[in-house]
Image (cartoon, rainbow, N blue to C red; front, side, top):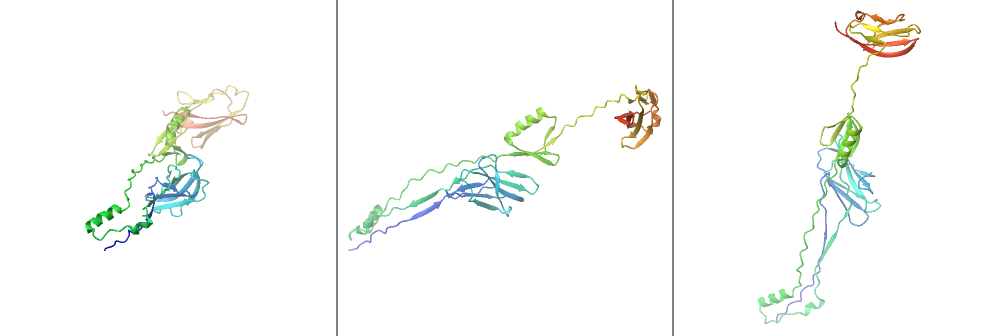
Length: 307
């Protein structure tokens, strides 16, 4: 009589840990396993990077403090374990500096929990060795019986996880005056910044790239207003008109526009007085200083036209 040995008891426990795929900068991953530690990781595909720093804050938009600057920012894959976070409600972001001085902040995000799944094969009853098949049963029938005695391992296939597309990283604009960076503006605030500049200033806002704005300060055009004491007549001669010449001592010094002295009048004894334009070597602008009793009364300029 053939006896079949009892079916062996099998206990299989498989630990499947949900691993996270490292995201490429400016995207990155932050996970926690519930042990008060946040694991930050990323893939760096930038050709040249001079600095990568990890920042943390309670708020998603402000108050970020650098907690780690990577010793080798050029590593293709890198990460950091934050074991000093107050809790897992903190926000993290990464600050990246490129070789040309441009920099960016990634979008801030909180850690998500890395779950663990355990698959267990149910154990057969301990008295399974008392289940036998008689010797007269054919081999085919015996196989069918053993198949029916196998534990039901069919499980319902869980639905695929819902893939949530992460939001796009925040975009920033860098505002410069000439070559100096004066502000960094979130893309959400760009219209508000534009409206404020247009209504409150006369400056010009120029986009010189996808993320760079140059402010050009308004320079008003100078409007020339002749002096009422020293000015050019229609014939090109210079008139000196000092109504109080009899009460004060007036003197005048003439210069070219580079400040080189031309000639002086030590005392204007009569007014009005005309100075022939031939006293000036060439046409163009000239400056003068008018003194009253030794004190500077006016600094101005006048124009000598061509003949």
